[in-house]
Amino acid sequence: MNSVQKILLFIGGMFAAIGAMVSIVFIGVSSVTGESGVFVVIPLGFVFIGLGFIIGVIISIVNKKIIVKRGNKYVAKIYGYVDNTSFLENGEFTQNVKVHYFDRMHIEREAILPTSFAKGSNLYPIGMTIDIYEYHGKFGFDPKSVRAEILPGEEELMDDKPVSPDQVQLVAVTCPNCGSSFQAAAGYSSKCPYCESYLNV
Ligand SMILES: [Zn+2]
Image (cartoon, rainbow, N blue to C red):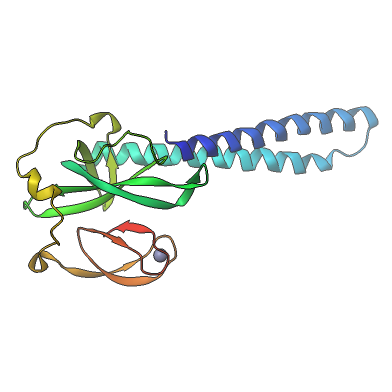
């Protein structure tokens, strides 16, 4: 579970707990006074909002497990970091990890992993090796697989030469964050020119 999920779970838990307590008070009061207990729908709404947060977190954890379980595994190098502009922690953007790896055709690829870690933590040092999983264009990773293994051809993965143009295939993409459309190279990560968030193409 990452920090964002923990925060969402905390918020969901608070909503559900406070909603449940107020509901019990409302039901108690209405049973004593004999008045209609219809106002209990308000705190019950809070309970449902809270449960919605909790279920959302569970679904995102299950989805990540499915990517790892069913996806194609690649061994990748941690190349750098990009800001995850959707989530702030301590007033700063959380960090997603950019990896480089060779696909089945031995073509160098790039992907952004949804690590969402706080800036300054040393969980994913640049140059380390990590197991990643690709399933229907979504990327997962095994945080415990971060290791100092040296890969064949890793100098090529870690260099900063631009991607060779003959291997680039431009495709139309829609930014999942802001919905804009633009062209980007298939198999690489791209920065949305409109909202500056990163996506895998
Ligand atoms: Zn965008």
